Image: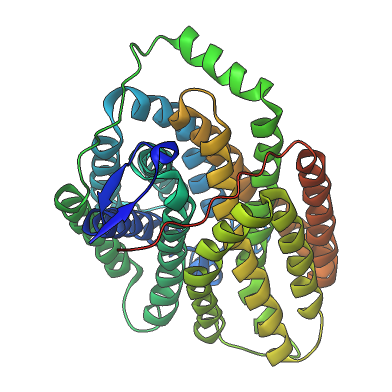
Length: 413
């Protein structure tokens, strides 16, 4: 079985479907392990606030520290991926993350735990940039958007499984045991990626790691408005998404819902929608234009947030599910857009996108903690919708310059 493409769709002229399956499995697993090991801490925030006597408005600092250091690391790991190779960096990142997670049970104070989780975020920062650059180089353009969508699906399943597993286990086993479990999963996935992911055939390493060259390359990316404006969008979309899930459990625990932490964590099952929304968003983007699809998704996300204002648990869940499904579609389009529009050093370009993405999760997530503490869920909802409007305006500024190359997805033969 092969996937055939014409001469305009290189780098892959005729590629075995089995190779695509191995690529999808390896990259989806790496994304799953990365996000699961980072965000299993999120549903534990209410428990950690009690155990360490941390104010509700400040307990999310542990997640902000993870995502901030993940973002910081992306400033360098994209360049490392361009120099040393995509597959090698993914494997090293997974192994380092697993080893560091094994050390978490040794942390005897809140400060030390936060610091260790921040270092784990730094260690795992190489995965996403390397994976997305690998797709751009090794996968035919006509299916690259779909493959990127399945990588995002792996990310979402990681975020979902991490949150759900932790929320369901915390009442039955210790936090330390949960740490050990996620550490082992990272190490196992590193081994699987080593065997599954085909070696790069089109990778051309950058000549050196000179700091001035790196800075110059980044400056060129920022001059490209097709990239710099999408960096703003990435900052916003993960910021509002993180805000929703940081404080969802706190809100649902109170009146009129009175839902336990374990049951609130089950809403993360909605991440499974990314199996459909992420690849489908890629298909729609190729057909109708990326920015047009993004604006539509932002509008639907705003509608989802409005539904969470209704004092009915079913309506609330529907709103959260709609918001979540659209978020993964936005992220899939954003990643593909950056890979497609970068004129050089794709790994670095994707890393910059993800830097702003995770910084948005860190900063907007923290700020919304203050907003939630001061104004409640209604005030936070208003702030999230305002940010989505800003994102839509940015997308509109790019839509006029978008060159749509509407290429049908190649059939399997």
